[in-house]
Length: 190
Image (cartoon, rainbow, N blue to C red; front, side):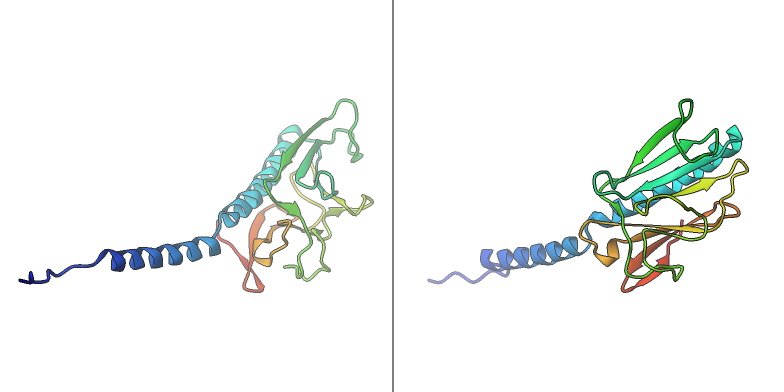
C-alpha cells in the first residue's frame, strides 16, 4: 500500500533555494562593499579637519596651514600647522598635529570636478612653492582661503567609484562633498 503524498518541499528543493539565495546575496555584497562607507568617512574627516582649522584660525587669530601629504612613505595624513609666524614652516613654538586617512590616499583622478589638469589638489587657493607631493592650503586669521581648492582622495586600487572630492570655497571655506560614479562626478548631500 502506497501512502498518499503530502504537499511540501523536498530537502533537495530547499537546498537549491538556499544556495540561490546565498549566490545572490554574495553577489550583492561584493558589489556594495564597505569601501564606500570608508571613503565617505575619509572625506568627512577631511571636511571636519578643514572646518576645525578654520575655527581655530578665527579663534586664535592666526593662520593655519593644512598640508596634504602625498609622498610614498606617509601618503595618508593631513598636517595641521598653527603657523604663528606665517612662514609655512614649523617653528619652535608652533603647534603641529596630524590627521590620518583610513585606507585612502591623496590621488589624482582621471577627470576633475573643476576642469583642472589631473592632480590630487587643484585650485588657485593652493599654497605655491611647495614640493608637488606636498600641496597645502592656508586659512587666514579671518577664516578665508586665498582661493577655491579641490582635494581628491582614492584607494590604492584607483577604482574610479572609490574617488571622492572635497571642494572648498575660498572666501568662506565652505565645503562640498563629491563622489565619482558611473564615469561622472556627482555632488553628495550632507
